Amino acid sequence: MVETSTIDELDRQLTHCLGVDGRASFSQIAEILGVSDQTVARRYRRLRSAGLLRVVGLDMARQKTSLGWFLRMRCVPGSGEAIAAALARRTDTAWIQLLSGDTEVLCSIRGAAGEESRSLLAKLPRSSRIVAVTAHSRLHMFVGGQDGLGFLEVLPAERVEPLRRPARGGRVELGDLDSALFDVLAVDGRTPYADLAAATGWSESTVRRRVDQLRDAGVLYFDLELDTAAFGFLSSTWLWLSVPPSQLAATGAALAKFPEVAYAAAVTGAANLAAVVVCRDELAFYEFLTAKIGSLPGVERVETSPVIRTVKQASAVVPPRHFSPERTVASLQSQP
Image 1: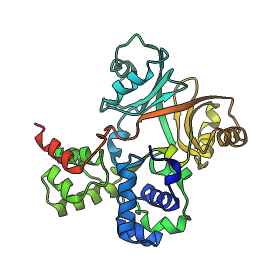
Image 2: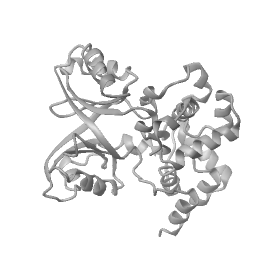
Image 3: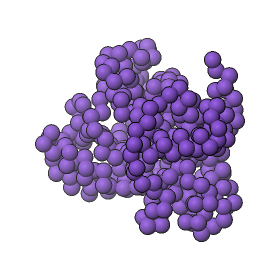
Image 4: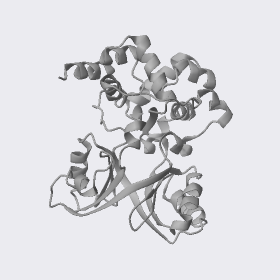
């Protein structure tokens, strides 16, 4: 991993811009940052090749029709790595993390709408090393994805406003070629249009229009996967909060306003509000917990689970270490 000291202010500004629009052109970002296109391109490629950040294009329509389950698996000490690796190979999992000193694995698993929880649990790798499983169905998301990068914001809102795409709405029908498009974007959301055209068989102009249509309809969105520690955020922690139902909506909305909160959702289970908090260090997390969480009305109980390592992030695809769009397109074309 690249040391934190090698991430400078320009890197952070570039990352902030990509968090607003993952497919913004280098020239657009350069104009905002007051540097050359070449400088932006060089900085991005360095961060990307080092594995410190990745832009991914995700299918919002698929997520809206999925159950959105969190699975918390308590494991025999020392077995978490192998279990997480097995789950990461599945295309229906995301956000696989080792928690609490390698004794717990958490993952988000998606299934078809209406699928029962026991069907999801049946997909787990069968292993005596998993000693307990708790399933939480996501009921409502308060913040996450592009909106959950407040901890990264280093530029004033008005500076990055030109990168924000206005919501235009509209409806689109997805076809088989759209699936090929999403497959490539899930690996690298900044894949050039020429490579997207090769993957789908469309012309480059058609792909460009299709991407715009999907984005305008809210079907395609771009998220940012990060090595948060490399950017100086050494403490990531899951919070499991118990809140009276009458105050759940208000508490979740208040929680979503904190820049440290990267994700917050109402869930089923004994803890009905789950959140991920990203802080500079454990002292900053302690201050957040006591001052900000402590100030929220209605919070009756809080359980904390420190993130030891993130094995897989938002995309269902874990990229090869040395990813190239050309190899991805070639592999997709060779599939039956």
